[in-house]
Image (cartoon, rainbow, N blue to C red; front, top):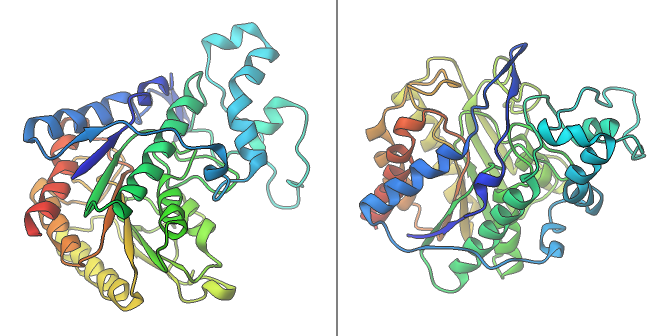
Length: 347
């Protein structure tokens, strides 16, 4: 397993987030990636390398130029409002919902924050762009590694990415690493690519990016959005539109879902995936399905992640794993690396 590690991930370190009406310490912290890195080193599961930088035009294959310009300049614009802002993160307080316009970018920076965000739980910090951009570099490099002969690669980066859309951030995500990897695989010659999202939360950003396309099959197993973030996307009746009709499969699961029901849903996903005839697979690997995760109501255990990796290996596809959610930091490294080791040992 070739791992592309984002050495800059710690530059994104939020002071706090709004969670259920209160300002609390961020769940998404540098300790998450550090725990996975330590476990990778302990098991010696392949090489760990840093990525080569990729040009902004690679990111524009997925994200709009206007949004990327905003992210690149957001922190300096925040400081321009008030030098004292250096001591606090940028968090939006207004959004263009329902009948409000979003086609015109306002001059006011607070309004821009709301235009490009989907929640108030994703603080934008001094190092957010550096961390997110380097993570995108990792994703593109990991996808390209498959063309160079790697059987599988792993993107160890944060902030995560699957909630980020073409022109918005949220859910701790700023750039959509899974979508960037999938697009690069296509640009590298793949005819069709599948994205399998296994995070506890629905990958709304990835779905929205590929919803009208037939060259990417998006499948997601996740908590029912009627009760869990992102709330407004991830229902079973969302099947794609236009050319993409039939190429989006959501498998929402109820609270308390355990291994038996979860793996049954995974089997449904794998059968659909096998029928698609993909040339490569991108896995949005969130392990916040773990029984001890503070943001989850699923009940998978550490051994289940070995089984997961084995099942994915049997798909027989070149695979890019993208690190997404998982907030039980003590067990996080074991759970993530169990997936990778299960995949490797099944080959």
